[in-house]
Length: 344
Image (tube, rainbow, N blue to C red; front, side, top):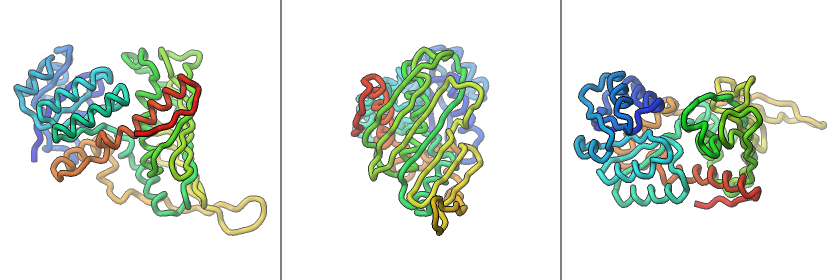
């Protein structure tokens, strides 16, 4: 099946979407871009020219472009503050909608999207591409194997001095809302259990080029006694971690270290006596389905497959809202300096 799609929001993020659709083997010849929408028409025209979309309808009014093109899909790549209206318009026109993260500007808005998608009988999902990174899926598989015993804790460090410019430098809670959602969703996926509560300290460090909230430290409580510690900053210069963060995953039998790129180290405690047990290395298995390890392209492919197969995609809105709830609970905790429970 070839899906007709309109893309709304033709800024810098849209290039990754259109490149994946045009070039990646998982997506090639499965999607036809029939429309591009942006409030600044020259931006949409430039993107159409860049990707050779001469037949695509260009416009500044999403409602009109959707009515003219009658697509199957809406790719929502707009700024977060515009997402609720864009998703509602897409669902009204009978589109399945795939949105950039974060899913919504508030938990209530996210819940409305879920209700709207259900009422329309359409799929709404979110691009949580870190969930489809090979390393994240390898960790999930190792934990499911029981090789580390029962999971007890996840520890994550994200320190990147990112100079984006644009809207991010004016956002409130920029790290938690715009970036940490990736890491929190990955932690929830790895752990395989629900988040229960959080205590968070948010700061904007000296020298930060962001307006608000460029750094955060958060302790999340998960079901089954699992603890997730997150430390992050978008204004930490001089020693960047991977964009996927640096991880320590602790089980009752051993520990896994992942640098967020290609280096894995997993050890369990060998039999012995004395104060410290010697470490014994174990293998970290490759993901079973390598098609699920292509980041953004895998999210898009899973979205298309789910529609064709009549199932929910892995990053469906009614699941992703649990990760969004972690973000907003952390933001509330940072404001109140109190432990905040998480329930969705």
